[in-house]
Amino acid sequence: MTADASILVGRKVNALKIANAALRYAPPEDAHFDRRPPAKLGRGQRLAYALAGDGMRLRPLIVKVGITDGVDTEVLAGVTESTRVVISTLAPQARRKDSPPPPG
Image (cartoon, rainbow, N blue to C red; front, side):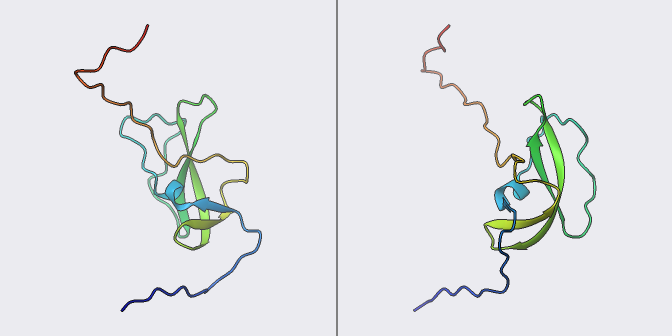
């Protein structure tokens, strides 16, 4: 017999949070950036990415983080409520040999 238990060790009210998927996101090797991502981060800092103004390049964001529940993490600095962060990259689908060519 097994059991799962959750233990509340911290609670923040009205905290700004970011999806952990955004903090785990790793850009593809051929990604283009509007500025170079930092080589090193300080304690309590994580790297996230937003789309640059042109919508084609990534903008690295240094995010200072607080507590986490394993799904979301508290943001102390580095992004605002309106910041749209990247959580995944859509890869172009490979066309099957037996599929018709695209229209046009």
